[in-house]
Length: 158
Image (cartoon, rainbow, N blue to C red):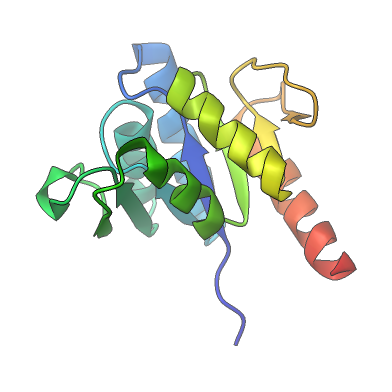
């Protein structure tokens, strides 16, 4: 039995309402497609994406920066405390089959860089415009569809 696909949703720890809505939609789309959501487990984009996934019956995994699983947002099913601080960003990316990058800051940028460096497909849903990222101007549905297609293509090639 092959394991279910996991997608890392990366973005700001404090999100404006528009970005939070986008993240929640991403979580819903992932859950409807049976994809596990992996994130940093805290607030902002992470909480909104998890909330969206849970509202659609999905599974959420939070890779936490600190040692306490109680720090996870309400919608995290599996909280993994690491005590690694920002180093946990690499764990998030290795846990996932692909990355969806929403608007964020330097932490999100590090996740994008790790994803590109280790060869994971990284979809740009935040206007990053970084070479190697896959643009998805059509929103959450298109972003997930493009990312799942890229994951499937890469798995078939390996």
